[in-house]
Length: 264
Ligand SMILES: O=C(O)CCC(=O)C(=O)O
Image (tube, rainbow, N blue to C red; front, top):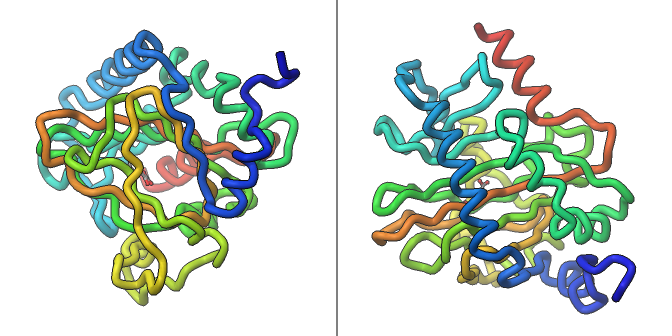
């Protein structure tokens, strides 16, 4: 038995460095994903019950900052369908404990070259059947630039809670796009739209679909270009995204809480 059973193999480390991502199929079993789905759905239901607050639109997203719970709720436009929530670990012991799972932490030690990766932020993306909207082509880096202490040292583990394919809006990644650092941003006045790229901007790079079964995990860094399409199927495409950084640094929740309180 290796000392760190979930650590990256040499081949995975190489793939991560060259291609910018690593996929581990079926890392979590059906019982585990069912428990996470149940915790996530219960939380979303509690958060959005009777919610009727003004929403703000930035780029492709419609936001609703919940000051009392220190969470950002993303809606599918003006509808009552939730796109996702972020951050949420402080609101659910089950989801918080999942972030400490060695199947995330051990590879993160290799990615971040640090002994004790800590959460920077976490998202639950819901992509509901037929209503789940797109996540436009982007890098995570510019969104975190003025939030994280070092946005270049934040990496994400995305766990698929449902089988994900091209019909229900699986993730697409652009292999090797991380190698170019920050891609050119548009001139938009809107601070979120500025981070959204068009697939036409890819030059010789190619978008590839990451079709994966529920329980699979993809690891990627802040510079990898990625996107996902709307859900056009009868099947949900839920996913948890845990983003880690070296310990002792400010978290997205701390920054968000300050900003939400200041705007009250
Ligand atoms: O859930 C997805 O398909 C994409 C997630 C993503 O890139 C994001 O939330 O920033």
